Length: 508
Image (cartoon, rainbow, N blue to C red; front, side):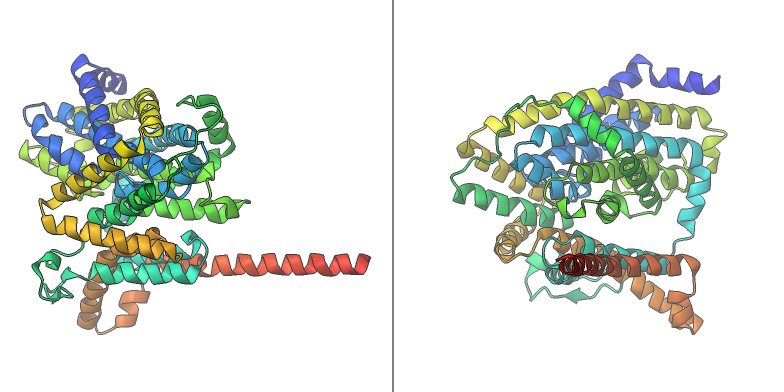
């Protein structure tokens, strides 16, 4: 009976209106390159200061939900992730758009986002106190090994040469060390210029490595940006549902991965979507088609990164530890209002908490009609807009989006430089994804290693510190499987082909 009352409270006109405005605003901001989900929440936080805590939570959660989903638009249509969590969506989303299935990719992204978001909300509702304790078991060493596990996914994500993928990740790791050290405060690789003192900002690098090469190619080639399919409807719901039903296990598994990763403070949607994509590719029968426009790749990444919304709220609300960067902004907004997080949220403050959960469920459901409607408009705009207008518009948004992150001209210079470098590397078979992955995971790995090293020195045993915990050993095992599984799979395929050849010769 209480849950019904909380649901009705979430459906009140004011809360319903806030959810609608929040999702719409989040989608629009998230679709613009450089304007991440964190920025979307931060920009609109002041609007919530005069609201009741449950209404403020509903609006902020709706903005977050919409922004994470909105990042898929630019990832699919212009090969530029609107948010870092949409990096993996470019792998198959943009190839689908290039062959004329951009409307299908947008439809699949919408369906997967809703499904993943609902799984995350369900976990928040039913498993929050239990799963929050899991997050407390992760220390610096576990985060170090988690970052290493993320880097091993390059072997599964690399298109073409795995060696080039690891070289790209090495470049990303090197870029992550520029500026002030995460631990210790040492200044590294700035070459005496203040431009590099603040380091390489992740979103700036993301825009440069993904967007600038696309702009250069648009200018250099006379062909149309996207191929027009035979039937461009903007919404291909029946076909999309068919792909969802055929890949329902992939969808559920990816959403579960997204929820689990988000529970770990600071991990975020970019890692979740990459892990989900790698697992979908590893287990697929047609794994060779991933990276070439496989719809299951879009389903995996979008369900995972939207599941991080509900999953990230678990440590945020129960422990007061932000699960993702946008959660940190939301937590700060709630603290300003005098709203304290902790286990008592689900007892003494149950009315606020469960009303918010119901509102987050409502916002996720609103993604379906709003996402399809806005996605149809975005798709038709990108298809029909002439290059002479498309290129300057995207270029303007990239510069403004990069500058707005830290109000720094240096970030714009770095973005443009990395864009030109990325275009040159792409011509020689080096993809941007491993570089960005190294850049994202570098600070996590460095901080975890240095802190773990100090803990090992204090305890007198480096081996037990890094290899003695069950969580560490589990992640190490997964890392080894991630590295060697593609090799084993290739060896088996070659052996099978060789056996078939020998059998054919015997028959002859």
